[in-house]
Length: 483
Image 1 (cartoon, one colour):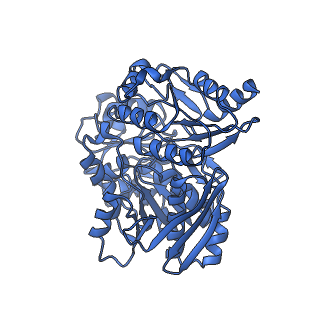
Image 2 (image 1 turned 90 degrees about the horizontal axis):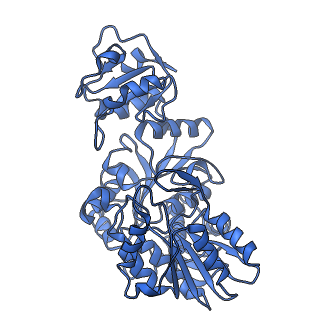
Image 3 (image 1 turned 30 degrees about the vertical axis):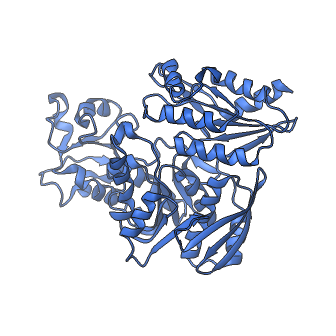
């Protein structure tokens, strides 16, 4: 709890500042805690002042606003104008939560694919915590979050809680939305990591160029000691070239000809795990992991690059990699009683789906069956691309609902089919549990089923309602029914 007058001292010239004690700062009126100060600034589509009355009804102690919108007369006496509030918000967050980042080593990860996996694996490797899609906290004991990267007050609140819990290292997922909206403003990083750039979120950014610019901001706009960049990726090579003079630049890659400082190769890949060799400036790391797939091989290279940058010895790195637990909902394997293998993965972009399918194609003796859909109210352009990828690699494709939200779910499935050469050969089963059950029931002992798109999620957004749903539960039920 802090007095508002103390928080705003030297920032607001109001005499007197209302004698209010606040319990926090909140940008979202739906998620504020009674006693918080509601921060009303301009959002992407509307100004937060439109929610001032709702925030006060929900228990806000006061409304801080930027003066760009006049407060409603009914609540004007409970509103305090803070000039240039949006640009001052990082300072207010630092003041309220007593600069939690100053006590933490922060690592930020951006890229189209791999953010959650890298955050999870690095938090394990470093004995730290994470903030991202999977939640907030220590891997294996995560509290639920609402966004890949929380808004600024929520992020500072999370960092303060992690500091109080005794953490000294935190890995953050940095989404393109967050970078575009300056949600990491005021933070400095030990390491920033770029994984890759594919197609996603064009519903928000408009063009691939704008999407790339947003991603690049983590590397170009923030203070960091190390910059770990994937030079397998064409956009990554451009980023690395722009930071060529940085003493902290660490280029990494998997079986690439682009001469990274940390270069990995796969010795053996099965559904039981990976055996790898990784050349580093400190020597060769010969390691084994329970993680599966080429994508996870890249993630392991990233972990090793970070550990080498921090001065870990090769024997310690080998031990750490061997102990890494799989990422929830990312290439997670479930074995059926007849030997059939089901893999659950969060892949929801064309690149991610292709990577998952190619990995499984290489290590599957029998048929490869793919169950997936696309989310509603998201980039429509990727739907036919994902259909094309699935048809080209899988032996059988079953299209089903993902999170249709308020879109017509049949229309979404048709847009996926539009990218296929033979859409008539595809099975369409909108009800996801039924589609998973059909795939599992039809899989033989040497077959593999990829259930893609939702991964770790425990709900399904059907527009008019959000229902409990887990791909893991659906697979387990299907295996029992198929036995």
